Length: 140
Image (cartoon, rainbow, N blue to C red; front, side, top):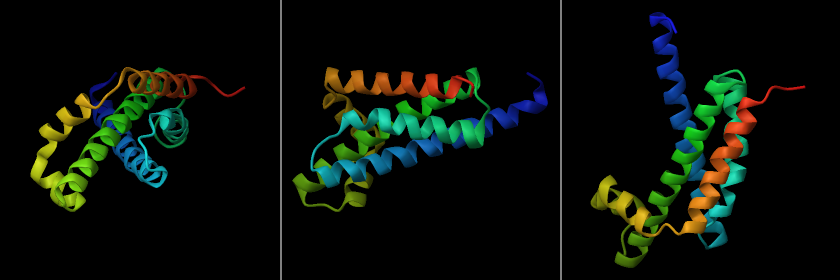
């Protein structure tokens, strides 16, 4: 890696993070529509993120695989933090933005961790592995 390539890699990481957060927010909307937590949507988010990263950020390979796995895990984390904020908002009669602002990132992260079940973690890891595999493999 050349020093002049560092900004490109940083920008690719930033783009993958933004895609992951957008996927997490979309995932939250789907879960709200279903009226239940939906960790089983992790593979669907992984497929979409892997496709987007391969198409617009990095060519298939190790770099794309790492970015896709990172984006998928970030989407799962953001999804869980948003679901925790929704539960706080519902329990205390707050708006979603008010609950997010009042609780803060640290509390939402801790609430998300406390609400994580082992089966949820398995779905998230399976999604990250699927995203990495799809972003790594070359077209035939």
